Amino acid sequence: MNYEWLREYCLRKPGVTTDYQPEWEATRYFVGGKMFAMQGGDREGRPIFTMKLAPALSDFLRHQHPGDIVPGYYMNKIHWSSLYLEGNVPGETVRKMADKAYEAGLAALPKKKQREIREL
Image (cartoon, rainbow, N blue to C red; front, side, top):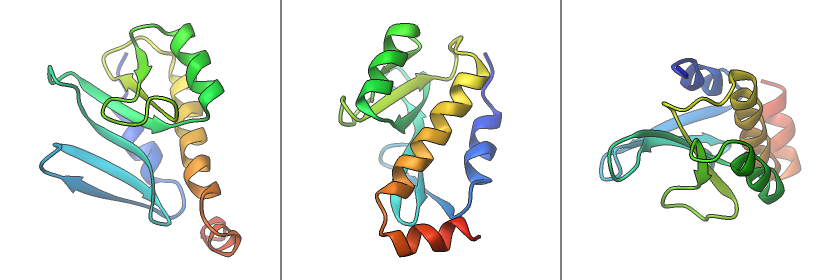
């Protein structure tokens, strides 16, 4: 599967910003200052996209797509899952993962900040 569209998909969401961490060789995605995703690589250099998801959803996806979706690489293994960008997860599932990750970041913000971002 080719997920080149995933970066732009995340960047089109209201209030999303990014930064690059050279020491991790990773791009982090934020909404309102809360990180919801990170794009980088694993220890072998295989490209991954790590997203913050509800624990039940993470567990479900890991069982549905073993080897393609794994516990978050260098992240909290309960709340973060890593998607191998060379995997075979359907695009619609990846979009839903990105949407849920974004919503998780947004939900961590104060209600006022959430309203401001949603109005962008």
